Image (tube, rainbow, N blue to C red; front, side):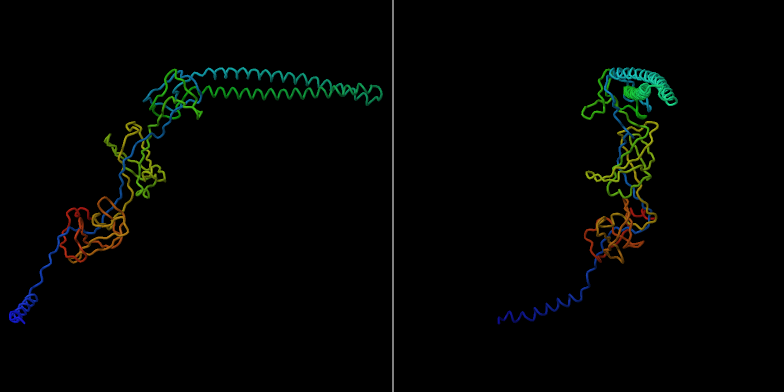
Amino acid sequence: MHPRQRRSGPITLALVCLGVVACKSAPPAPVTAITVPVAVVGRADLANDLTVTAEFTPYQSVDVMAKVAGFVKAINVDIGDHVQAGQVLATLDVPELQDETAKTRAALLAAAANIATAKSNIAHAQAGANMAHLSYTRIAGVAKSEPGLVPRQEIDLAQARDLEAAAALASAQSGLQAAEQGDAQAIAERDRASAMLRYATIRAPFAGVVTHRYANTGSMIQAGTASQTQAMPLVQLAEDRTLRLLLPVPVTAVAGIHAGQPVDIVVNSLGTTLKGTVTRFAEDVQMATRTMTTEVDVPNKDGKLLPGMYAEVHLHLADRPNALSAPLDAVDGLGSASQHVDIVRDGHVHIVAVTTGLQTPDRVEILSGLREGDQLVVGRRTGLAEDQAVDPRIAAYDAPAKK
């Protein structure tokens, strides 16, 4: 063995021993607590409100068409005119219908004349039948009381005349029935022609405002009943005394929609706020937008609201009075199967699973996992671990949120 190595052995061992003694005698380094903002779990009145942008549309709108073809003789309204139900909008000139109406009147007169003729024929046939029957009855009576006095040929001839007169009477009666049926047909044709001629007068189907005018005096209007033709309407009419407000409700809020639900309507362009209720909803979610069309009927008697205007609608979906709640940013994994919070107890962080309920823009209902008064870490929680020492400080925004 080298002499330096022998001399250095005891010295090295002594230094190691001194190092061990020094390590055992040194105090542990203090653990520094991280300052974290916390909020206190408390009770509050929670309300779930939904704000959507909606559009006003007419309660009903229709292109007023003509049932018969003709030329516009007169059009009495223009854009912006308010009309009442049944008011005349335009009249058409239809010479063919006028001629047809005149023909039906003539046919009706002819049918009346045929009825008069048939009745006269019945009277004449009735008289002939009475005379023939009377003659046959007398001859038959004489032949019965005095056999052989009247030749058999005269008896047969009288009987034949009686039967012939009865047949003539029956024929005259049938002629009257045919004349009456012809009269009924003439009346039906007259009524049809008159009804078609009335269609030449275009009337408003409901009270509203004219929003578009398509035709002018002299325009050729085709009948709007033929699907293969491109018939031109005369005017477009919209009912504006009541408007429909169409709300695209997201699929996440569909379950909270029901008829009669109160809504607040803010019309920013007019600077007004209106009250309303949900009138109807589609009960069908559109696949393209994942929304359900919901309607609110809004009275518009003063006419200030116009179709096409936008409004902000605030839907009141649910209430949770005096509910146990926490700030929204205190819960991780909201909406997922794993929701948890970082709770501070005895100066240390603990991860606790929770179940949540109703959510508002700033708070969430706590259904299980926490107690009133628990302190939760809010904001960014990067770097925090289970059982880590922390120095909790109440977040300033939490004070007014607690009840």
